Image (tube, rainbow, N blue to C red; front, side):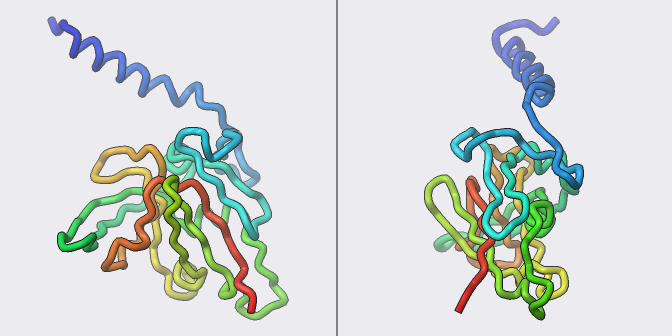
Length: 184
């Protein structure tokens, strides 16, 4: 029979991992995707989707795993002098933004090309992607909000742009996605 503190601790962690999702409060958005009821991005693991959207959202990595189709991507980039490669799993950035309902003006030809997404991290780091880069009708870059890296769950989503050769737009621990209209 297995006994001892290590086995007991492992069993406790397993029970917590299985039961915790049952007690995490959440609601469902109009399109039936789950939306966390967390009230601020200071809550552990939450991030906001705001800006030029019809329905601002507050989500976490669990919401991404549960409410969006998972996509996998392998990313190889060079931070300094060493190439790093990881396998990520996450939701497509475009699908999460679509849930929030971007407010593109249908009267303006290709209005969505006037928008960009500002991605912010818990340490203040930021990166920007143009809408044309991520839109399936244009560049169709498969940008992920990763909730898993090399099979391990992440506490907060990370922005992954698999086609990037450098890691400058690799944003760890996302706290917000802000859809901005670029004006002259």
